[in-house]
Length: 374
Ligand SMILES: Nc1nc2c(ncn2[C@@H]2O[C@H](COP(=O)(O)OP(=O)(O)OP(=O)(O)O)[C@@H](O)[C@H]2O)c(=O)[nH]1
Ligand SMILES: [Mg+2]
Image 1 (tube, helix red, strand yellow):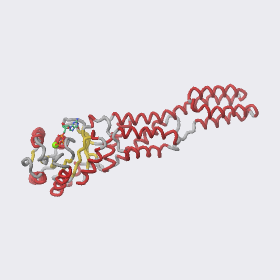
Image 2: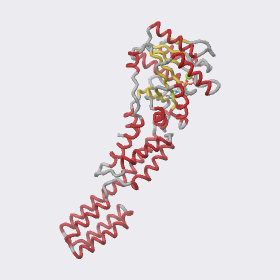
Image 3: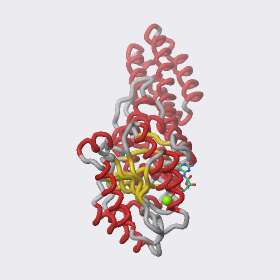
């Protein structure tokens, strides 16, 4: 699950850490030879040679800068040997400046941004992650051994910020409103009907009563598909004929639930009618007539960048929460970040398979820890 994004995040953490870790290793080694210089300032020539060799071996890119300074140390040592250790100390500091600089992070963050876009993260969101990281890293003091956790914590914070949306608790909500009607919206094939059945099973498992409303009267076999699930889960289905008005079907289901004291009405809907405009008009009518308590947009997480367009389109009816499906077959995962950033609505569940039990309550921290590690 989300292997692609995980890889991009861990590559960025590794690259950002590597440079600092190398500098810190060099610092440690230089400190050791500095101790020698303090004890025996007359050995300056030997110490400088050793330092040059170390730099050459560990950070050849620093050769030019450090080379000149080391010669400076040697020169001072000839005239005033007592000052050479402090000069050497200054040099170590210069090499291993503890603050992260813009040039340390910029190229790595650019690579991360490109990687995120390849992973279906919308441009705007990838840009936000990049600038969050830059703001929290540049100028930051980094102690030895701290760099990895600093980078990964900054990354986690940025992702949590994107996923910082209200939490939705169906069990709390049904205490206030019964029956509680949930309308499942989304494009054809996104997983509405399967997800509706999973949610039904999940609720029945918690001892809530449910009725299904067969609000997809358009697609061939949609009624049979819903009835099959209802039979397995042992809940009633309210249905009309194919071609009937879905708003009327859902209306009847709500009446049925009211008269029987049922907790939840789970209303299916069509994913495709003649045009997207017709589909939206149909959804708007359902909403107008039935005022569902929760309009849940079901998005196939494999949709890629189109997911944001879908979200915007369905949000014309007012989306209250989102469920992402097929995360079991999704390597990228960017759609979850992009859609949540766009809609700022709760993620009710992630669905990770075709069985009833393949449904996970969403927890932003678990999700982020899974992506970033740790
Ligand atoms: N791997 C995987 N497959 C899923 C998941 N959710 C749904 N599917 C499959 O996706 C396909 C479409 O699911 P449906 O529930 O029929 O989708 P729908 O949105 O109701 O489709 P329409 O009724 O045509 O609009 C089915 O084969 C499901 O088994 C999931 O989380 N993981
Ligand atoms: Mg369906």
